[in-house]
Length: 479
Image (tube, rainbow, N blue to C red; front, top):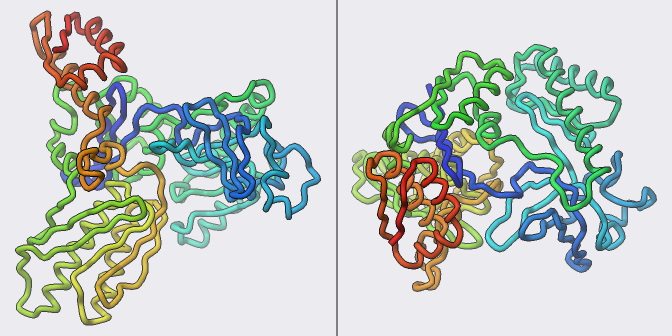
């Protein structure tokens, strides 16, 4: 059975999915404005004709990016908040200047949060996901999750979706998620009605709000993650924040997952440290990862791809060389998939296994890594393992890699190594200051920092220091 642990800090929320003491998935979100799933009334800031994309002002620090692929699917569907004129022909989709003009209002949704120097990636093909269904007003698709294999159940859910589309009087797309299997008709219908009402409110806000403005904010991060991972295998959810506890309890009641226990952790130590898997989380920042029975992985990231090298190290296997290599590679495959999921690695991934001679062993290895990657819902494709032992994985990017969240390129080694970002160092120091305030009885806390970190805290986070002083009735001196 699995447990979910939710840690809420002042600047981020971290969520760990743990099975029998082993970390199987990790999610982290920093407090940002343009979160994936948010819906905005934006204003076209710039149209780039020759590259067929537009920049959209959504009120964030950087303008959002709207590509031709992210708007063409929703051009022919009412209500028409994407384009001004209903007379465009299909050929216009290839010429963005005939669809968008500078200063034009547009309804968009964030599909990827801002990334380093790039603004949020946007789409006009809106989707409102629920626990059991997805409501897409700019799509006419009716679908049932492929993971539901029972034909009777598939027909039942499809009938519900078709009937509900008639009731809400529109051509909205509706998809039944895997969690809809076995759920009562009334519950599925109720969720669709809720999302339809949510959409109607968004349309009303669009008409009366001046751009740029946020019209709909995605569910709070813990609920968004629960929506994707909560199922009958989850035994308990442990949180370290009262407000998260209330939100999770409401969500459990709403989804009727009453068998899942929810409780509050009240200790002073970090929740991950107390439950003894903090080292596994810290290990996500390492390039070298040991694997079962000896051997290790080495992970290297470039801008274009991620390379994972399998090394035998001190591995001891069978007397037969081919069998030994297969055993090493199978152990490595499980750990490779686990690290890809934990680190949220997307894009192009090349895995360099120890070379094997037999095709049947290569097929067995490919099947093993695919089975392990299926534990995450993120879409992926794999190549055949070639004569050099190389396997190529293409995996959808859903958010920043864990490495990119915590590290910047090192200015001293020209990017060959990595160092923590100033923001990450400040946040770690603020966590320690807060912990000392909680546990130290002295009225005055004197805390030593490197000059540049002290300056950064006093520049960007002084409000948090003042808040700690007020909350814990301390005087904090940074030196």
